[in-house]
Image 1 (cartoon, rainbow, N blue to C red):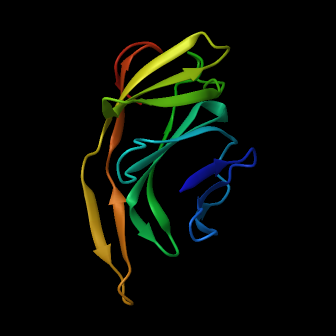
Image 2: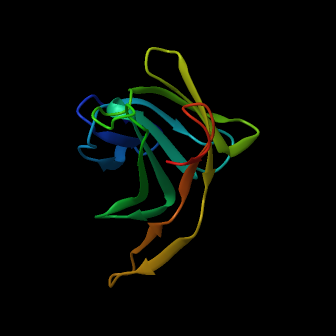
Length: 153
């Protein structure tokens, strides 16, 4: 599988063995800057996308529904103190190889590094007529260090 993000906010996952598009998510609220699967050597679990305007998106890749796609967690980093501007562009997001729940982001002009901890929470599975399943993603991202202190965002 290969994932690609586009400046119009589209995210697509391609199955190279079957030479087809496996999944696509249309029009995120802002353009995609980076994508990363949480592990290379294990079955796909999560996909992290960092975007313009301080946005993060995490998809749970165990919950594919043919029409609704994967369950997704969306977060927006803090903007200026007055809350008038959007957060800085999150240029990069990378998982810690030893722990897939920890990732670092690089935002703004390259001077803002943030260490985040992802808490999976619960995934509630449900099934539709026709046998297709889906899920509701209740995870959250906790700010560990950088960007103004700890706490959820």
